[in-house]
Every structure is written in C-alpha cells, then in structure tokens.
Image (tube, rainbow, N blue to C red; front, side):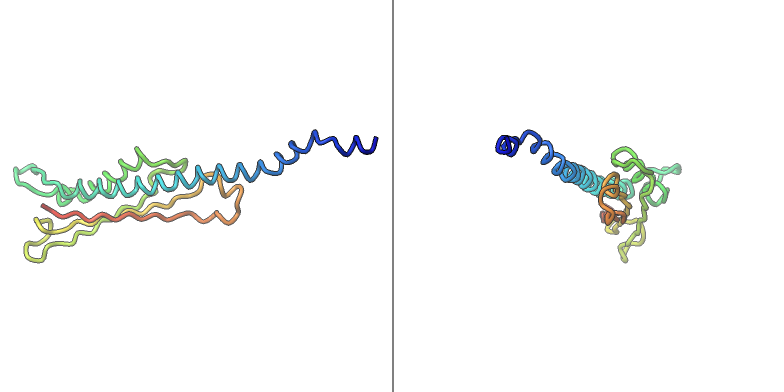
Length: 154
C-alpha cells in the first residue's frame, strides 16, 4: 500500500502550474507594458516631427503676406503636438502631460523665420507604468521620454 501511495502523481502538475503561473503572468505583463512604452516613444517622435513640420510651413496671413505658421502663432506648434499625442498615445492617465518646447535657431545672414534657418521642436513625456508596479516594487519610477526634431525653413 505504501508503494502504491508513493507512485500517485495526480496533483503534481497542478502544484507546478501554481508555482510557474505568477512568473508567467509577470512575463506577459512585462512584454505588454514595455511594448506600450516603446510604442509611446515612437508616437512622441512622430509628434515632434508633426510639430516641426507645422512650424516650417509657409502660410498667407490676413494681409496677404507669406509667413511661417510658427511665426504667426507660437502656440500652433504646441497644439499640433498635443493633438497628435491625444489621438495616438496609449495611456490610461492624462494624455496631455507632454511638455512641448520649441527653439528657433536662425540663419545669421537672413534673420528669424527665414529660409535657411532651423526650427527645433523638443517634446518630453513622462510615462508611468500601468500594471508592473503592482508586481515589482522597484518600477515605481516613471520613464522620461524625449524627442527632438530639427527642420530647415525652406
């Protein structure tokens, strides 16, 4: 009878599954979490490109003169970036916590907002983890992403 009792292994697979399941769940959530973070980094880069492109485009102002859109409306670049991020960023927090700053470096020979000058758009975003800090205590610090785009006024 003792030999028959030692040969029964009907519950071992359930115990092994119970031991491995938390690690498997942590691994799957880690893949999803970092996938979302890297997607957001790519969208941040695209948003900085969209903002730079919006700032270097020529437009006709109310008096019929050609000017750069960024010159006429300094907040237009920031609005363009924030609109892009609100449409494409994956977050369950506040999608408007991106910080947009743009610096114009000009062509010394021709002045500000002139052909040959450059527009630099810097966008920073703080990504807070969605699920992983509930499992891993060391992941409470958010990730800080930065994207920079420099385009030439043509």
